[in-house]
Length: 94
Image 1: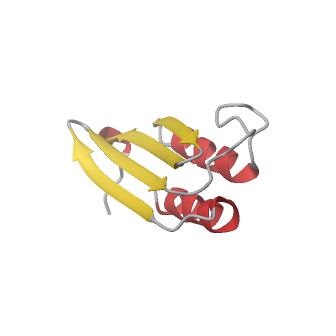
Image 2: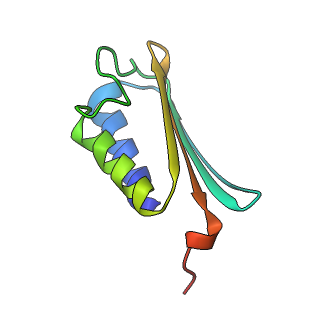
């Protein structure tokens, strides 16, 4: 999850020109939910669900899949929101 957050923040800094960023992590039922949102310029012509999306988004998707998570990306000219839900039975506690 930390690497997903780092990648999302890196993307926001490099591309979004956002003034505000929000990171929310909470437990819902049997899942851990992460929401990263910004008020940047959005993804524009880049389709968030396409296979040819930017390397950062591909990395986020790959990490979410590794954790058996579900990811949704919503983006428009008012910003982007990435939501990831990861089943808690996949989380390993040390």
